Length: 357
Image (cartoon, rainbow, N blue to C red; front, side, top):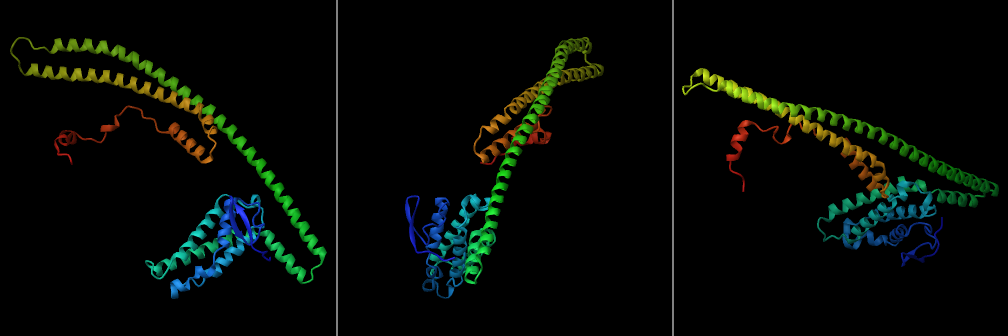
């Protein structure tokens, strides 16, 4: 493949020198600009014998020429036919990295800090970039290989029938590729539609589950409310009865009076504990009913909230946040987690300890 004379193209309104006016003519402007910058480097300046002496990048010119050749051959391909690992940022990021490495090579000199270490690091990184271009980019340059084959065959006396057959086979492969791409797009739409329908069905089922759970918790809370309403007057009546029973007669207080008083305090504690259990279970079930209703509301709007976000990454983040909020472990409220691990000794000692300033 022979290169044509240098020409000036405009990329984003900026004139750039390129070996071919048709270089990547259908490619994005930012990619063409990076390619033009890559092709514009002076390999002797990158080698840097005058700056580095014995530390010069002797292998860099050949490596840069190899990367350039691969990029030139890839420029014969249509941008929309390149695989996603190249067209969706892969080629752009690797070209940017290559230019950054070449700029560091140009700036490195024998008076720089740790020139030997930086030289080894940059040489190793340029070798890695060349390997990536050879493995990921070079196999995609199909048109360049066909042109080399046809050109070599023509000089060797290949007949026109062979060339025509080769072109027909390539055209047939292109049609098949386009057909496969259309089928893939159709299948992706079908999969997306099936996924959306499955999500709607799952949302409706899960919404019904949380609606039933909310009703169950509300029903249990109502029963505990009745129990609390009954336990309060009962506990008050028993407390008055116990007070009259354990009240000592007369002024003198004997051991039996103290034993009766202790028994009375114990019974009053049991009554208070029973009232507290009724109140706590009422609060817990009302809380769980409110949580279930909240999750039911979140599920009912889950699909619409996710679909309303246009950006794919942001939609994934919103979906993950909603899923975490829906399927998070429920706080039952039976235990106050703020003091679960605090012992009686710590309760008594910690307030008196000096705090750090």
